[in-house]
Image (cartoon, rainbow, N blue to C red; front, top):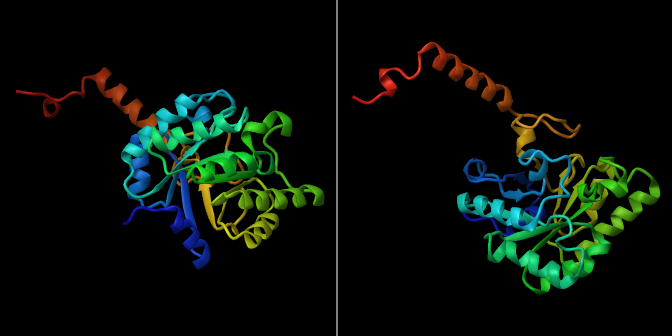
Length: 266
């Protein structure tokens, strides 16, 4: 399987072929996703919640994102790897934004970055694109804006809010974004945005009409269960399986079953 590129994303949009995308934060899971043939891996700042145990994504730092992105790119042979710009890594100024975005490509081996926002980050998107840093924009529910948005709520439910999200998507595209991630919006609104954009849309909680879909891997595998969003489908329940395995190990050590001669040297 050849290496997935930005041009493959655009080609899939033109051909009507769905784009597959999952998050990963380390070598083993990235390797498994890549071997499964998924198109794209997002090293999301969601690692703050599913890996670090934080309440939200806001405390995640650039150094932490670079570290985890390195682990992922070390494992990947085919998938496109996108690094997620953490809170305050692109807000303070364009120079800082471009410099931090460049670290994902230069220091961590990613092929692109994602940042939250549309109109308010259009200048950053333009500057990054001019610096040959491919950008995926992120509209709708934006986890880095939960305090302003009042929590993890569906966006674009009123006519005015829906109109604004359509505008945000067009502004991001015009600024140079190669794709737009749409999170937690009504499916008909996502359908409208997808139809109007020339670049692909990636949905998470945005219904079936987007050009592709992304989910957090730990949700898909049933590892993270602090809360399960409505838009998540669990394809496995690895947390329960792992607990059963650890309990079995504990029991066998305590009863002398493990290690046996089979696991010993002579």
